Length: 616
Image (cartoon, rainbow, N blue to C red; front, side, top):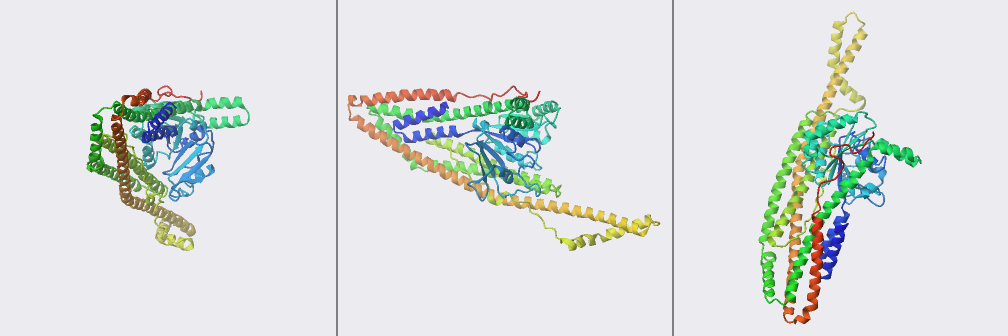
């Protein structure tokens, strides 16, 4: 990559003129830009074919579970790696637990019997694969479905979009966009600029073109910013069939199926559009960082040139700058007061935001809990917990962006450009991670005793219905009357038991919401304070280190200027020549950095709003 070569040359030149700090910064930027891949978040409601789509994109049928719902709160990140690998991050393995690919569902999917996670505390599953699409510079993030009862899944996915380069929105040919999908897209416009739509299962739904047209109209109405986004119609089954035919040596049949699958245009858009454009934008950012380093090197070299010309006023200038740095930087606490004020304001904003979001989530969840039954109580609890994780993810993003602003303001006030943007992370509070629904125990015993406990309360109902039956059917055999009455009474007993079970489920989920929300307020507050304190201390230490380094540079420049005053022009001529060479080289590098910075623009995908592929 051109910007990586540029940064390498900047680092080499900085080493040559003995500016180790600038050299290291240039190397760090080069390493960062080459290591980054475009992050694409894949979104879709349950049963839209999202996991099958990812499996087909990676030519790995069966990689991600498709027959069960992806577990609440768990994102699966797929990235390029030279060999297969998978790692689970949970509360007991924060550094990561290696697993085999065939255990992905075990950690990332709900148990179909209990609807609970098999392993509690799982926060993320990362999968590395030596696949061409990922190697082109893409990370794919598979997310839980966005159609949750309390929209916790959707909120968690929206939080992920703040750190993404593009959204891959998956629907299928069965029906147009749902209300929850339209709502999600409307909110997504606040988080991300680039989206690609994929309509799946074209082999299953013959009228998929009508569905696509209706969905496009809904996008234009509810998320007009994405009205011109490209659509791609695909069939994961045709891609899988093509892979099997190719493996069996039937190349011609495989080629036909691959063409009908529609995956070719989608892959080209992802690799040639999103990945390439994201790489260009990151390169532009790296080029801007290179310009900052080059500006500093140029300024210092010009001052050295002035020293070699034996400018008598330079000593006074350097002495004044040294005194100012000591008084206004290392010695003066004014900048620390400014820093503290910025962090106090950030803490207040962040606290108000997370408490407001938590209140909204709790109120919404409780409204759903009032309508819960045994089938939905666990789903509501899971979705509420996912919403909490989304609030935490948004909180970290807000704090990170706030620290960038504080660091930039501090750099301007001190006159020192390039104070590093710091990264600090506080993990999701383990006390809140993956808590199962708090259930009220059934007070009734099991076995024969339990049967008696259920039947005895129903005896009045049985007797009553038997009496009614006797009055209505006096001429009927008494045994039939008893049977009819007993049956009716048991039905009433079952209805009463069902109502009791439903009420207990509502109590369970409401108790869970109140308990976890109360703990979240406490835990989030502590975690936020820890995060702010950590970032503040890191910024102070970085600023002081940069001041000390700058002070050392000024002292060296002052000592060199003093020595040069005692030398002759002839003695300094070789150094002047070298100084001119360095300035010429710096000017050339600056021009290249300027040109790279100017490269920007929108994503170039397929025709606006038109399907990029699909069966004929």
